[in-house]
Amino acid sequence: MPSPQKIIVVGAGIIGASIAWHLARKGASVTVIAAKAGGEATPNSFAWINASWGNPEFYFHFRRRSMAEWSRLAADIPGLPLSWCGGLCWDLTEAKLEAYAAQQGGWGYGIRRVDRETSAALEPHLANPPSFALHVAEEGAVEPVAAANLLLEDAARQGATLLYGTEAGRLLQDNGKITGVATRDGALLADHVVLAAGAGTAALAASVGIDVPIETPPGLIVHSRPCPRLLNGLVMAPGLHMRQTAEGRVIAGSDFGGTNPGNNPQKAADELFAKVKAMLRGGDTLELDFYTVGYRPTPKDGFPIIGGVDAAPGLYLAVLHSGVTLAPLVGSVAAAEIIGGYPDPQLSPFRLSRFAQSSE
Ligand SMILES: Cc1cc2nc3c(=O)[nH]c(=O)nc-3n(C[C@H](O)[C@H](O)[C@H](O)COP(=O)(O)OP(=O)(O)OC[C@H]3O[C@@H](n4cnc5c(N)ncnc54)[C@H](O)[C@@H]3O)c2cc1C
Image 1 (tube, rainbow, N blue to C red):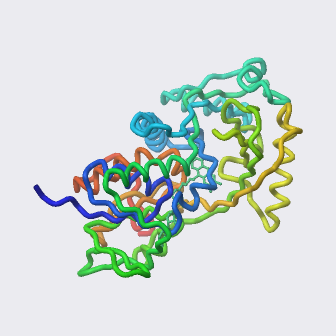
Image 2: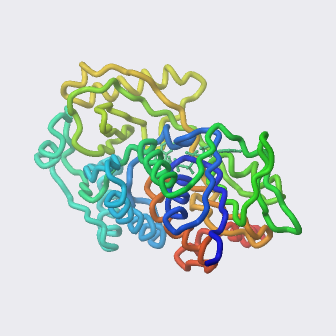
Image 3: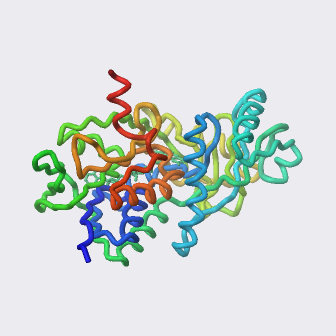
C-alpha cells in the first residue's frame, strides 16, 4: 500500500479546519500549523450561512451547494452548533428586494415575501416589524470557532497532528516545488502545503514570489451578554444585521461584514449597540459585553482563491471571505483535488491564475 501523502495545512480557522478534516478523512497524513487555534477572522465573524443577494449565478450556486454541505458535516460531527434559523431581510429598497426575490428565487432560493404580520410572527421582539420583507427559511448560522475546533479535534482523532502556537515563517522550495514550511522550531517537510492562513496567506505566498492579491477590510461586531431569546433567526434590517448566538448573545454589525470601527471603535460599538436596543422590544435589558474587530480576508475581486499554483507545485491556496458559508464545500473539494491530483471544474472560476489573465 502506498504511504499516505504528507500534507501541511497552515491555518486553524474555519477553512483550515475543514480542509484538514476532509484530508484526514481521506487518509492523508495531516499536520495543522497555526499561530492561533480557532483562527483570526473566524472568531470575529457574523457567521451567516447564505447565498443571498448580490452574487452572480455561478457563485450563488457554489454558495448554495456549500449550505447543503453544512448539513452533511453536521451529520458527521455530533454537537456541531449549526442552526437553520432562517433570515428576515429588508435592508434594500422595495424595488431591489423584488429584483432579488425574482432573480434568486428563479435560481431556486427559497425566498418568501412577507408582510408586517408575518414578520412580527417570525420575530416577535422587533419593535417595528417591516411592512415588506423577504424571508429565507434555508439560511442559517454556525458558531464558527466551536465548529472549527470540533473539526480539528475529530481530525486529530483520525491521526492529524495539531501544532498550535506555531508560526510558519516562510515556505520551503526545492527546484520550484514547495517542500514544506520553516518554523522557529525548524523545517517541516511535506508533499503538499495548503495555505488556509486567512490574512496571513499573502505574506507566506510572497516568500516564494507568489502574489496573492487580498484585502483585509475591518469589521466591528458587538456582542451582548447572554440573555433570554429575543431573536429567532437572522435579521437583516437597514443599517443593522443581528442574530442571537447559541449561548444567547445578541451579536450585530451595521452589516454582516461588520461596522467600520473608524478611529474610535468603542464609540462605534456604543452607537451600534444603542441601535440594537432600540430595535428590539425588551432590548432595554440588553448589556454590551464586548466588541470585536475582525479583518476579512478578501481577494481583490471578491471571489475565493482556491487551488494549486502552476509556478509552485505542491502549494495549494484557500483564501476567501464568506469562509463560514463556504468552509464545508471548500474543504471537501480541496481535499479531493489535493489527494486525487485532478482539477475540479467547479473551482475553475476561483483559480489564482485569473488575476494574471486580468492584468494582461
Ligand atoms: C466582521 C466579519 C463578519 C463576517 N461575516 C461573515 C458571514 O456572515 N458569513 C460568512 O460566511 N463569512 C463571514 N465573514 C468571513 C469569514 O469569517 C472568513 O472568511 C473566515 O473566517 C476565514 O477563515 P480562515 O480560516 O480562512 O481564516 P482565519 O480565521 O483568519 O484563520 C487563519 C489561520 O491562519 C493562521 N495563520 C496565519 N498566518 C500564519 C502563519 N504565518 N503561521 C501560522 N499560522 C498562521 C492563524 O493563526 C489562523 O489560525 C466575516 C468576517 C468578519 C471579520
